[in-house]
Image (cartoon, rainbow, N blue to C red; front, top):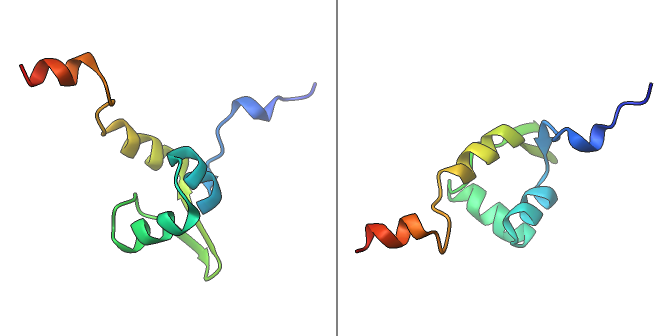
Length: 76
């Protein structure tokens, strides 16, 4: 039986995948990392840095949804 791994999110993601998720450039990822604006990264080697997908998902869940009616109601 073949398992379908495309349905399982990867445990660790690299800067390119994180940039795609956030719709920004890889240089932005590195700047944000240095500025402490991203979840903590895991350094596997000096040239291999990854982020836990679960950490990124939790971090993103903390941001308000742009255009949300809840956010609009708070301003009234």
